[in-house]
Image 1 (spheres, one colour):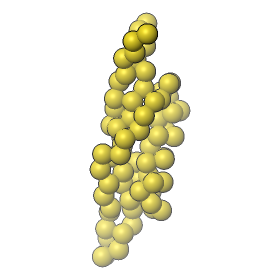
Image 2 (cartoon, helix red, strand yellow; image 1 turned 180 degrees about the horizontal axis):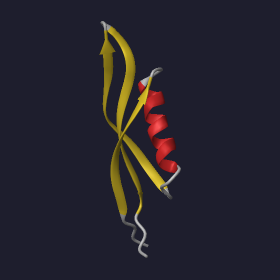
Image 3 (cartoon, helix red, strand yellow; image 1 turned 180 degrees about the vertical axis):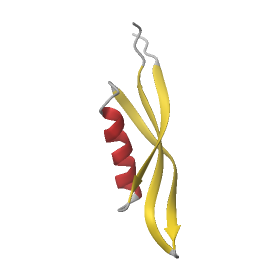
Amino acid sequence: MESIYKVIELIGTSEKSWEDAAKKAVEKAAQTLEDLRIAEVSAMDMKIEDGKVVAYRTKVKLSFRFRDK
């Protein structure tokens, strides 16, 4: 059986780590999207204030099964 997947891009943020930021993005998406398949980290960066890291940001490409109506 053939499947079609849709890919969206999300940015998660965390004060703890890049991994936590990615996890938050996926968990939030899972609240409204069904049949999540793959999450691919495409970029990571940090927010800096006064010379200190205050937040981690992770850009995630997330795929889920596209369903016909």
